[in-house]
Image 1 (cartoon, rainbow, N blue to C red):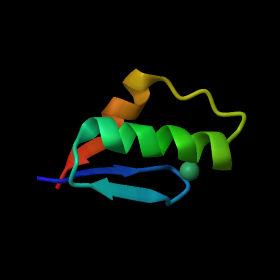
Image 2: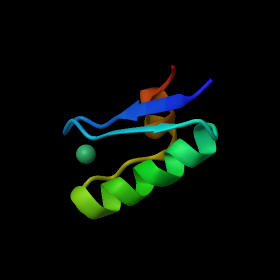
Image 3: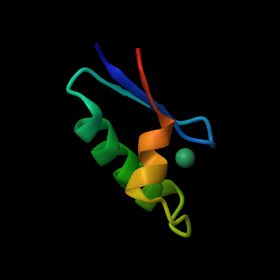
Image 4: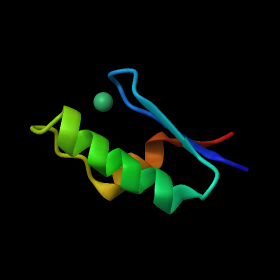
Amino acid sequence: MAKLLSCDCGWTVISPQGEADVKKHAMIHVEDAHPGMNMTEEQTAKLIKTV
Ligand SMILES: [Zn+2]
């Protein structure tokens, strides 16, 4: 099963490689699109859904 993460801005990532991969992409997105946003690992985990 793939993991999905949706950002508040509408950006979405889906990865069949699991939660760690989704988190990695989410961290890159936050740094890129929301430089001021302080996103913890825990907050990121809460946004992850299994699809
Ligand atoms: Zn975003």
